[in-house]
Length: 354
Ligand SMILES: NC(=O)c1ccc[n+]([C@@H]2O[C@H](COP(=O)([O-])OP(=O)(O)OC[C@H]3O[C@@H](n4cnc5c(N)ncnc54)[C@H](O)[C@@H]3O)[C@@H](O)[C@H]2O)c1
Image (tube, rainbow, N blue to C red; front, side, top):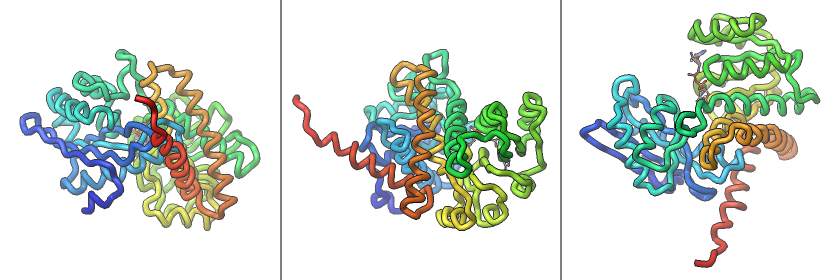
């Protein structure tokens, strides 16, 4: 693996034998500010797989944070292990000391396998842990504004396709009704949309249907993809959009909360060829990182929500630029993120006194 040639600023390996900590912190860019990205706790099969994930995820955070208008670069950390059995106070605190040792170049938060309460433990060793619980003045569960941002992106996509920024009367298919998906269902029902959902966890579907009796459920994602709908919202795992799925999709819009929805980069072109408007995942699911970032200023939900509402305008710009430049929305979104990194990132070259 070509780590030094990967375009990352810094990759740090952290090891503490006694607690069993084995972690990799990848700092992709600090051009816009300290590199913020969550800590994924996952039983990677190999060290190489862990490093590859950290490199890929930290790069994506650079683009997500730039598009969200945050003064943050992109980073990500992975802890190698099973979060159900390997997560201990000593391990989390050892990890916190390595984060502290980076002096604020990397800010950590929650990701798959880590929760607000874990970040409270990490924060006992470092000033640079966010995504903390409400009891500690933290932002709490970031899926609330993640879903809100996805909803804003979906409204912008609806306006682009149908002239009205509303999902009223449209059928939205939500794949995965966990934390983000179920919040999104609430917002869509309130907007007047019809919902069809699926989840491998029957209890998750039951919870949604208890709140909204009009929500229909189907057996699995394959059936969901075949069910007539206007908007497809992947809210489960990555890689939801592969060639077969895109070939079968009846949707006019794809807009969901899951990270890394495109199984391969060429799927972006297949979506264009089928006339499906794809709202880039790292653009519309940035509400969570906006919620987490707000902690740096003394958390205010109202302020963070107002900022996440801005995803509507950025999505609108991206769809407009994609049309004008004749490129898929992911390419337009990348260009917008890179332009901000260039134009705002270079300001630190203006020397200040002292
Ligand atoms: N929580 C956040 O703030 C946040 C922020 C940005 C991105 N995301 C992304 O959004 C996605 C959902 O995150 P979450 O926090 O809601 O996680 P979650 O675990 O609460 O929910 C995911 C749901 O998907 C279901 N699921 C898993 N595999 C499935 C399948 N094959 N078919 C149907 N359902 C399936 C699970 O049972 C679960 O209910 C993830 O990709 C995550 O990376 C989350």
